[in-house]
Image 1 (cartoon, rainbow, N blue to C red):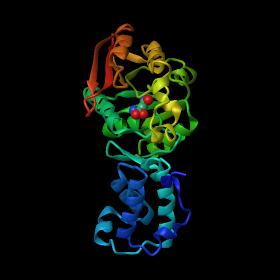
Image 2: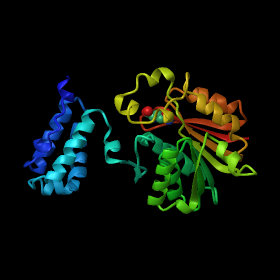
Image 3: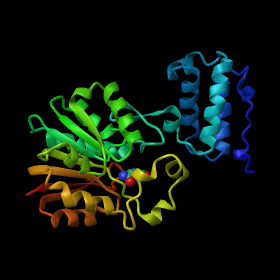
Length: 302
Ligand code: GLN
């Protein structure tokens, strides 16, 4: 067995240790396991296990870890060494300055997806009481962030997974937007057909759909492959299946001159733009994330 995976069940490796010392032990274990973010991961998991804040770790580092905290830290340590990302261990992820509950049933919101929220808010600045649709809402982080930032906005989030809908609903409650949001279960626009006689028209449709190609799916890093749901990642042979399906129906649900904004894979800008241009959208623009990769495509319905 690879020594990195030789995990002792014995939480006594942390018992009797001070917080500072345990931090060093965890960091060393993570480094030996090849985890690049060893230092910060060790600190965050130690905070979570001990209940000490970052500042307390600095000022009270000589305090001893309680046996309960040592047991918790041992489990977090094992999970991290096996490849589980820190946010799934914590059960939450920070996104757009708020904390969202996550689990293995939802894609953990990525920092680059904050740009999708920025693009949405930019468009909504001039819309009075915007009605927003988020397709494949997952944890609800995108839609809930938009609603929190735009207090007159209301919206619907749709997801195929009931477990995702449950998590999104909890996140809506945490961020006090339950009155302004509805989550529906189903495939893309389907629940709208089923729930409304006249199709509602939105001011904005947002989606970070699955966009990973079948080939790229086989090469995903372990923390994505084993801990994010493939439903949220798998975009079919060329990664574009979801875009095609969404664009085929979106015009029935979007007000004229209003906007559809997608997150895309870094090499999908041209393909998704072409799909929009050939389906009656204008002002089609591709924009970049903070790493300067093409990441968002916006189109306006003619
Ligand atoms: N950006 C995600 C990743 O890196 C993929 C998200 C998606 O398919 N929508 O895995």
